[in-house]
Image (cartoon, rainbow, N blue to C red; front, side, top):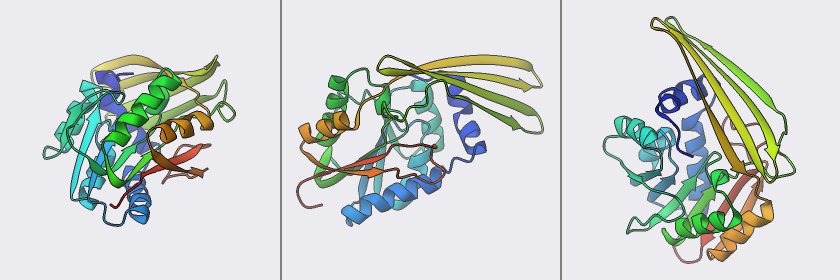
Length: 246
């Protein structure tokens, strides 16, 4: 799914106001990587969005790059990190012509893949960009047994010259989740409303593990691992390692 320009504009503002700590999350991820590959010096952030994690990764690793499908998200990332390359590309079939010591893919990005075959292609493509001994960290979307069917959420951000409300509703549709997000913005210009719908696959833990195995990665699952102010009920993190010396 490609986020629209409206969502890209308000993405960081809304999530930071809800308590999301992008810097803390990036530090947690770097610690996971360095605990398994102490000499890791380069990192690729797949589905990097607005570059909020990359901003901190750039202070920890010698070389970082991003990959993002949405042109509007890439534009925000480019403004934030003018010295960092943020490539356009689909996680299933990109080719950057180099390898990295670490690759991260966070949020519900892999959940937006449409099938187990797409998941296997994406994990395989990411693993193909790992150096020997490299580390691949993937945050899955919900599993079928911990998705909250019918969940509703809401958040209100009040600033001196702007008010932004964000409401969500999620439901199960077969093997996928449907998350509708509605925004209303009030500022000096008046009111603006926009909404987006995300359809995400409820892959099983076994399907994720099989995708890592097919990509040649030894896989560790950190159940219930929650990054700094991560989403409640998070399934955890998958950590894959490519055999070799980092």
